[in-house]
Length: 449
Image 1 (cartoon, one colour):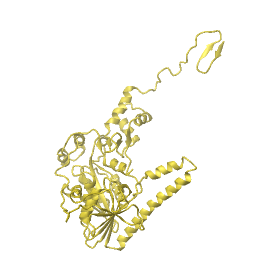
Image 2 (tube, one colour; image 1 turned 90 degrees about the vertical axis):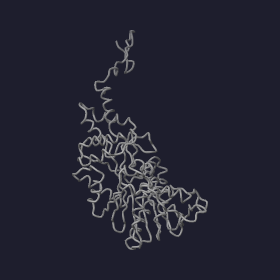
Image 3 (tube, rainbow, N blue to C red; image 1 turned 60 degrees about the vertical axis):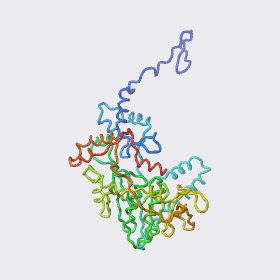
Image 4 (cartoon, rainbow, N blue to C red; image 1 turned 45 degrees about the vertical axis):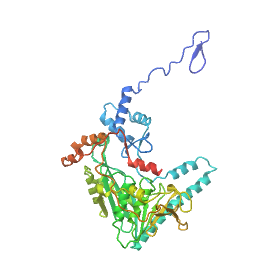
């Protein structure tokens, strides 16, 4: 007679040995082999990855990729592919993410939403915080709308919204090889006129200039230098990205364009930065999506932008259009950390900067859009300096180099590009190599977080 001890083992009533349970001791027939596991890793490693300057341990794939596209590329390349679920399981075990599109997402809203669902007792307090946060964001939008209407009614006022579009890959060709190769990046900084709905698209590629404050400042400088003499007040709206819009180099640049004008630079709240220039970028992307032609040269992006809308004015920048405003700041001003009242000057709190011709070298600023709040002052003038030297130097002395791995990838796609452009890619300057390159979009998203 057999007596049941538990559900895993049995024992004879009259004695004898206990026989261990044999379930789960054999290898499952569907277990993934080491060869197939390495095959998936090999494919994932073959796709170009990017990182930010700050968080170098986190790697990203471009936003035009997702897990489904990755798997389809894998299944197209290898015979007898593993299942999609197994491929995604291996991918999730790696420290790689897909780059977020530059959508108008607010980390504060997301955090408040998550926290409000955790504790019912604190739900009311979180709701009040959400309301206050949304009221501030909506008030900033209403101020922008009012300034736009003012620029329509008053010809002495010009209002701009401005932003850098997500990096544009060049070439952009309709072949699966495109996903395995590092492109040449083309940049587009857009300044939208509120009164006329004209959009100035300043474009360049990574062999001409970078995307930092000097480069963005050069685009703003070029645009504002053409403002009609009748304009006495310029209002600009941008996001709060410290590496591009909200920094000391941009402040030095504005000193150059102060004629008889007053300049207001206002920063929308992080995550609530939808502006007219974002609509311009969306139209450009839609035009590319609906276009049957491919992008084979950076100039093709200029043609596509001009064709997207007759009000888009495209400026293809050359290297001598980029100026060193950091040198201007160093030679003419003395940056301080406290204002005229002895209070600490904190960039992350600034929402409104004002520049006046009557007070050169003095920054007037507010930490909100409120009209009742008075401007504070930060004097950055150097002592014993009788006059300001506004001579500008160029940022770059020659073409910028790309990595040898990127050069190799660009040469690999030449069979898909017209022969007239082959010399352009073959003559690109090379300096050093890097397995993973820095992506300006990731950089900007992280700086805004």
